Length: 104
Image (cartoon, rainbow, N blue to C red):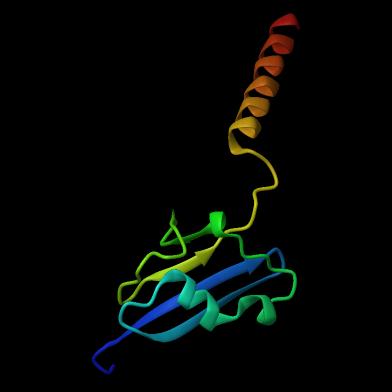
């Protein structure tokens, strides 16, 4: 790899497919630079890239975050259900099952 460059990955997924692209960018490149170079909306029709849903290695970040060699830029999709709400509902189902089994 030439001096003054860094290698990064850009990853995104839709329910039916995922895309990971290796990029070579100049030192000082930002998350936004990587997103621009990846051009994912063209490669993955239906993908929406929102500033509040991007990160590096699983941690949300701003588009102006400067990248380091080896970083993985990720585009996150909205969750279909709030994990806390799902856990609450499952706990309620288990609680009801426990009450029903004591009635027998």
